[in-house]
Image 1 (spheres, one colour):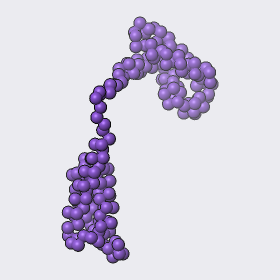
Image 2 (cartoon, one colour):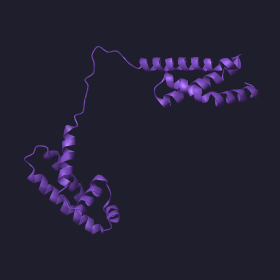
Image 3 (tube, one colour):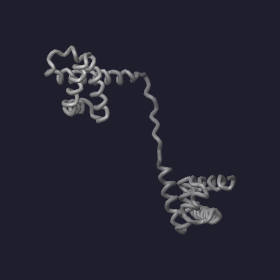
Image 4 (spheres, one colour):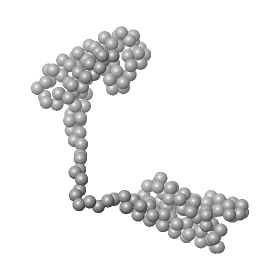
Length: 185
């Protein structure tokens, strides 16, 4: 392609880009896919730009390229589906227990003093080290350790008092595991 035709194509794209993008948006629902569609169509048109005798028909040519490209994409995606005689079993995770555990934990955390709650959250939810927690709360590392020890003991005691409730089991195991990990470290 001659240098003059390259400049002509660039000027065309600059002036018609918004209208062409609107056309692409009508063809595909996702804005990112529409931009990809337009870019692909522009690349394909660039190679054939000198073959378009009447440049006033360039919009129509590009729209046809976008339609063909979208159809190719649709067909390619459709080929990824493989028919089978039996449908696979649908696996749906039941997050009811997780929600119940989280609700229980949030309720049990209310029994802690604000300082204890802050230490537990920073150490266990935010995964901060003892030193990072101490720096964040403006206390010594030893104070963080003793506060965490007392807070976990208080939480364990609260969990044991609610042991009649079945949903306390997973939460209690979580705190026991965290306490073992803390002691091992």
